Amino acid sequence: MVDYDRETSFIDDDLIRRLLAQGPPSASTLADLLAKAEAARGLEPDELALLLKVDDEETWQEIFYAARKVKERIYGRRIVLFAPLYLSNYCINGCRYCGYRTGSGVVRKRLTMEEIREEVVALERMGHKRLAIETGEDPVNCPLDYVLEAIDTIYSVSAEQGAIRRLNVNIAATTVENYRRLKEHGIGTYILFQETYHRPTYAVMHPSGPKSDYAWHLLAFDRAMEAGQDDVGAGILFGLADYRYELLGLLLHARHLEERFGVGPHTVSVPRLKPAHGVDLGHFPHLVDDKTFKRIVALIRLALPYTGIIISTRESPALRRELLELGVSQISAASCTGVGGYSKRRGGPAEETAQFQIEDHRSLDEVLAALCRDGYLPSFCTACYRQGRTGDRFMALAKTGRIGEICTPNAILTFAEYLLDYGSEETKRLGRAAIEVNLAELPAGLQEGVRRRLARIAQGERDLYY
Ligand code: SAM
Image (tube, rainbow, N blue to C red; front, side, top):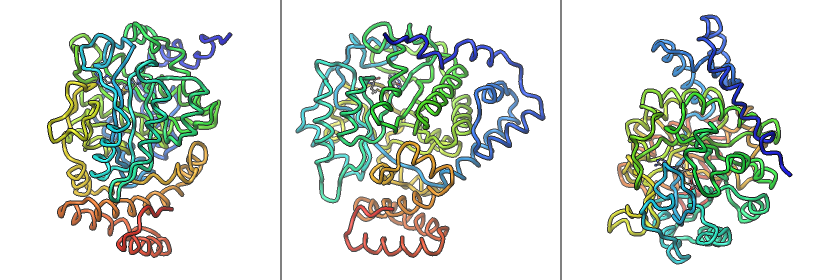
């Protein structure tokens, strides 16, 4: 028998409460903490708890400054792009915040393999190379065999110059055996949001269905890693419980995975609660405002410097722009959170099947142009996982800074492909300039190699990477 209380004790409620009861840091402690954080050495839970006590705006500006420095140092100006692909919204869970919960009144739909092909063609025609597949939890209407067949189907579709090169998977917590099967089908990151680390809130928010089991959900990454799936993506749904508790829970979770498997989460997603079918936000007392949300992103950047931060189209273009500065490294673009929404887009988005509302409705091309205007280098790179650079191998490269010499060339090559195959005139103009700026900063030998590859891409070759 598994002793779940013992197994989940790393989310140590007493410790979190004790840490949150501390007073604010002294000036000298604060200076030490900021120096450590700025040097990308991460934060321990007691240190994060001290920063959570800061309440003057001036110190927050110093924290933001440190977060920007860490972001710049580890991720440079690269931003990775992806889109979610909703396969099925059948769900037997009762999650109070979700438009897919049982009885929400949402129209239920599961894509056929033919419909999946149509969705993938639509996404490839926009220029996407990296998708995250999403489903509700329903072992009868959406069994694992269906998801595996969908994965094979998605990887098999190629429209014109298009191909999906990395498929991340966000499906319900499952068994070691099922994680093994997902890995065998070539998934990238296994994504699962804990939603809340606070046990009493978890119980209230998940009153029924398999997801109501906190331990089963929390230990999903342990099972995934036991199955060899060493690339996992964590997340918190901000708005359910006190964000301070959540941040400490997230850090304890990451430290637990590092201690047990040698590697923590590859990414952290930071969704904020949004209106959804039958969900009244008035019932959620812990909603997070924009100002607090920026602080949250900055603190995650400092606490987990080598973990990517993902922000979705739940947030507005203006706020996403600010969050990119403070630590976000991956964004979704041109997303549809309904089932079958991409191929039907000309007839309007599939709102009746949507999980929640989104606030960034720009096309992928518009998002890319805006990124370039702000001095970023968009990236469609998917090379690391295809080269076996996952888990602790990725972290070892990231921590020595060598990953930048791989990521920047790959960002340049994949963005150049995008510009040739899908870019509007304006994005081409902005994109070429962004590529030149970033090329010029590479060491001379590498620069030459990348230029040679760019020439091959201009001749029609595709999928060149380091
Ligand atoms: N198996 C996952 C599930 O059903 O939760 C599938 C992924 S779900 C499509 C992705 C995430 O959306 C959830 O984990 C949750 O954090 C988030 N989500 C659910 N309802 C939301 C809402 N009303 N506003 C914002 N995000 C929401």
